[in-house]
Length: 270
Length: 278
Image (tube, rainbow over all chains, first blue to last red; front, side):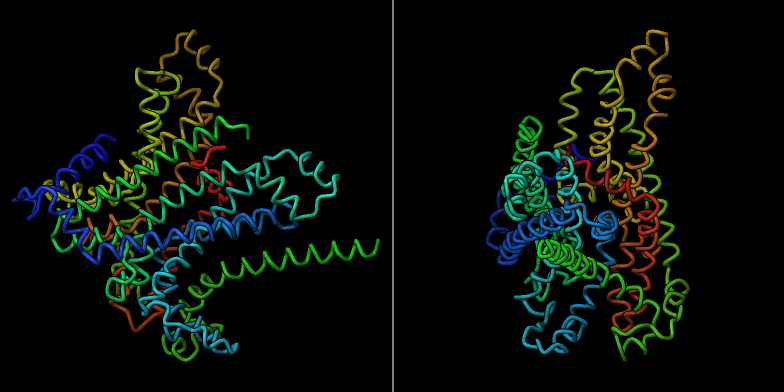
């Protein structure tokens, strides 16, 4: 762990203050940071990471709903759950390739929309600067939804059945039972998963973006990881390192939050 | 009474409809990969979504014969086996020492592991690349193997520590009282009990390594050295006019994962949700 984390963590901070190639580094102080913050491409990347955070409530909301329906001991529950979980383990590279064909201007989705007379909804999902990041978000939700479902379903299963029984006898209807009785009981898990997913969309979406849009058109759908990769590929190691340090700082704050939530989760009454 | 039964029926049906819709949207892209991979390019151009009425293995044959794809698969296999093997072994010893040996600072060690689990690998990329250039390991598989191993250890330690905590301490103490050395205890008592947990860990980590793209892309830039994912990412440019061939490659990369999933689904779900705790 010291080798894989300790050395590069120290080194990345050091490199962020240097420019030039790594065999002849030149001390530039905070210039890398200043340059990055002034760069519209970086701002767009950061903004896109923030936009992707919108996928978190969508995914957790939908995941929770599916888990609640499954929790009614519905027939075939295990099979449904196994299927919904499947995308989560598949390589994002392969899935991204398939989605890039499905979402092309003349791709399957648009053809379908035109066939059902919803042609006005058809978009250039990958080539348009407005929609490309939305497509990335859609892919993230598609692949990670199953994770939320499984985690929530397991948490719901752990609630003693008497709780729901009591509420039913008191005359609660389905929605009341779910959202007044069951959901509040798994609140710690919801909070924890929220933090985990925020970290994910902040720092673990390179695959999706790289394969689906390559950050394009231009840098319209770039994210911080892609920005690091791009500046690094162009030989600007210092720039890449300074963005890495900023990303690390953001992740650090979230890690702090997650440890705090985790502690509360294990100490809490649930 | 009949009204209540009717309402119940509607409720059950609407739930199934909802779940089936979700499952269809999960399955459709996968079906798209399979059906396209079995079409000739001409048939695909004519009707991209249709059923493959004349299934052909031509696209699959193209990538297997014309491309270094078998080589990439072999590389991926090698990288996965060695990094998962190494990290599991290290984590096994570390977690064993932390739970039963309670060495000085084991609490700090464990909370460091938890914190490191969430460090984004992309932040470590630049210094690791520089290091690998200096050691001359770029374009050699050991560069990614070493990096992956390091990245996997924290989760493995976390996972195994949680499992070891469920092993009754009395068992260990009894064995030590009878004079068994720590390694003998590990081998004779702890390991035989950890079969399912270790298998879960190995499966989950293998999937992670098999699917990893960014590090492989940066460290392995030579066509012969690529892993399957890094190679697949090159397909986009190379075969931009022949989508069945690209998706045939995608299909081959998905297949091992799906087979593994179908054979040990319980292990997957348990392992991948382990980070969440109870």
